[in-house]
Amino acid sequence: MTIEQINTLFLFILTGIVIGILFDMFRILRKSFRTPDILTYIQDFTFWILSGLILLYSIFKFNNGELRAYVFFGIILGVFIYMLLLSKYIINFFVKLISIIKSAVSYPIRILYNFFQKYIFIRFCKVKKKFSNFISKKYNKCKKNDKFINNIHE
Figure 1 (cartoon, rainbow, N blue to C red):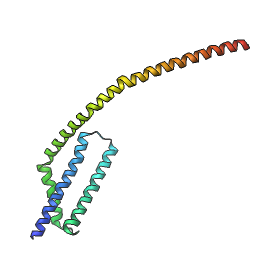
Figure 2: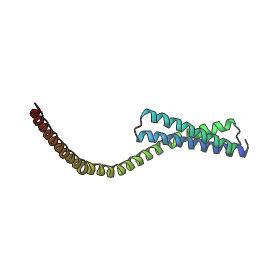
Figure 3: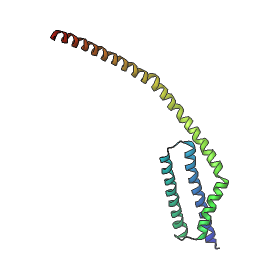
Figure 4: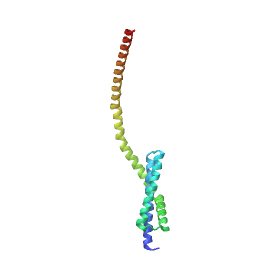
């Protein structure tokens, strides 16, 4: 093996690590947010498209489009090394980070929701009740007038 092939092998090991990180990013999203099945399918499709683009770019950029056994070996080895050594720590770190961010973002949203529910929604309901009472009074008045008019015409 020449130095150039060893460098290329190393670059494809790094490419495998990048693909492993991309895979974990999708896993982190699934752990952090509940998604419907259709969105999961879309995420899977997106992962495979992005992985394919990364692989194509790497093969053409670092190996002039030539497919060699050490290219596949490097990619598989990179993914394996990443999954074995780094994946667990990166997933735990980002899941905790996302939960902290979700908590930090959800607190102001909860405050706004409570404000909306307490003040705006309750006031809207009071206005709606007054309006419906007004309409029902008018309706009852019209109904009485209709009875009166009907009695006169009979």
